[in-house]
Image 1 (cartoon, helix red, strand yellow):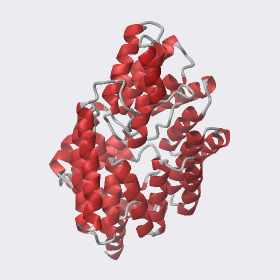
Image 2 (spheres, helix red, strand yellow):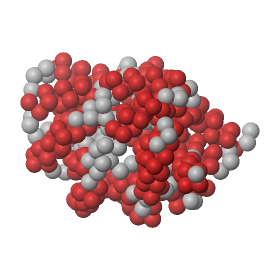
Image 3 (cartoon, one colour):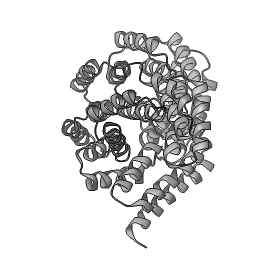
Image 4 (cartoon, one colour):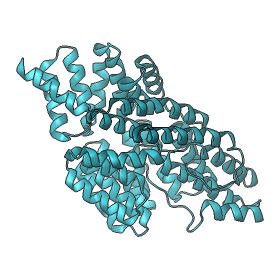
Length: 437
């Protein structure tokens, strides 16, 4: 079998293996493993009990099964494992750990409540995440995890003004990497990238643990990539990888920066490594589009096909994957399904991301007039996102607003000319056609 096919079958087998893991996820004290994507768009790590890995906590609980704090710590460790690698099989285990902790200590258990809030956020149940975070803060107003989860939940519910207030309060109570990175993201969503960069640089300067250095440097790299500063993005991501060589988020950041610079073979190689270990939707699409851009259409189709498998596994782990899959399906799958998913997610929460996803799904379904209002709302906060501007420009072109389309497409390409191997090419073609007319 050719190398391409062999690599893809390894990927599919790996995803199928996660399905088998889900069926055995009921036992909380089991073997160590890997686990899902960060819930919120910028959710970073929250420091757990120092030195307490899943394995050490499992050993402790075998000896002391009535240790409520250890059960809460184990649940948090499972959520963090899941955040890193993209395997939802840890979520049911985390849920059971929090249940046991709260059963043993139903009152005054901020650790379990905050951890359960982080789990709800990871499953994209943001109202539940907010409730648990606030319950935890009622017990311990200085809980770092609860403060971080509250920011994440408010961001993902589209309540940006409240999220800024929560970030300011968290910064006053528990300044540190988890709060700094979230504070920066709230500023980024409001269009203040200079303040976001300043906060992230402070975070990086204060980071001591390798994981914190890697996360802050990667966040700076992502921000640089968003603004088309690819060489700077590479420097930040390489800094992250020096601190933590196995960090997949840093490697993904590096891959996107390489693609932006036009080094597609190197970008493909990086993304293949990342996708083999954590086949999340955005990564599958990015690798598929790189294959398309390099003329490997069959390999691209194989990447897009894995999306359906991931969606099934996510749902089995209690995750709502609608926003994750709507955009991917709109471009590379079932457009009707994409529209259903985008509508469902938009009904649950109104964020710039759900507005953009619904706008694009409507446009791809031939309903551009209906899409335009959502595309405008997606760009209304000042959030500097080339994909949003590209989507808006293509929708404006479809409804006959040529001046608006020229402005939006030009802004997208000026901001981040390599935002997508496929989307950037389509944006240039559309802009050339508009200028030619």
